[in-house]
Length: 345
Image 1: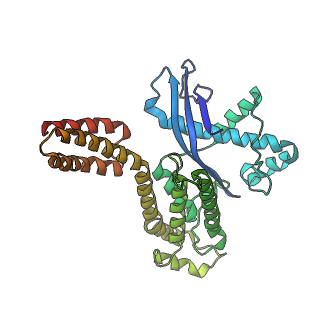
Image 2: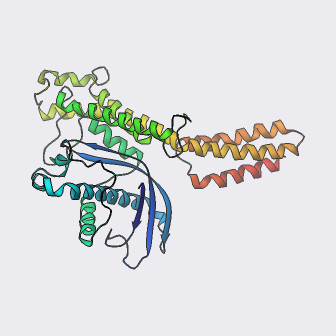
Image 3: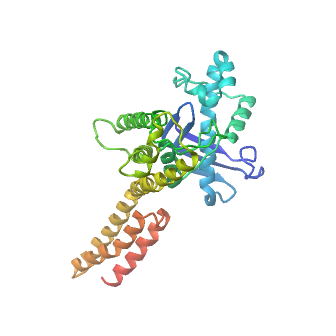
């Protein structure tokens, strides 16, 4: 089931009043997991379906999506733990969740996991969800994944260990192979969803997660490229297994962030914004062109109105592409253009 129905109470999150009756429903339109011995990350694309609430939840829908993502992850993790608990509980307790999930055969891939939850299981899920950390937004996610790919991000399994940038370490570079394999899995899923007969990508399968992972791969490769970040040559003498002095590594790491990670992040975010706004731009231009065509039937100078419509569309189109015009503002823009066209018809 790809739907997340989230009842919002103070038990779920202290920010919600216990007396408030409210819920949100999200559709999981894209999802992937990046898991290894150092980290376990799940990436979701959620689309809001409906709200039932007595309070103004629209103002903080990002918070609701954040909670939905954490509870969905906790629910699925709890299913995995429950299905394997009898035969691997001791290992789980000793090694921790991330290491346990990275073991061959640890993940139950059967789709018919038990969905009947007791009160105790619900409490365990809530407890687990509240321990998970999360982030949202294209910029935050792209930056986070770019640092991971570049070997520049802290390791959740060793939060007390300082991050030392080692661009020539084959062990640190292994994350690139893991990201590449994750991208390949996402690509296969996308192709299966697209359908061989149509050759078109459905509305809710636009490869936004693939774009994020591609951006991370680009950042990771660039951070280890001497032509892009010549400063990394200072660390070459330490080879694949050596650890450079922290002071030198920090200076080189900052250069890698500025010259490799940040440009890759900017490019990735620009692609994501373009993907998100493509349908909105099409809708805007189509409706304005229909209005102009209707007015042209009653006008002696239809070509002039068509030209004016295109000129009036230019600025809002640019704003949509830059993410500076929201979807909720499109109808107001269309009405404003219609008034302007009618005044010259």
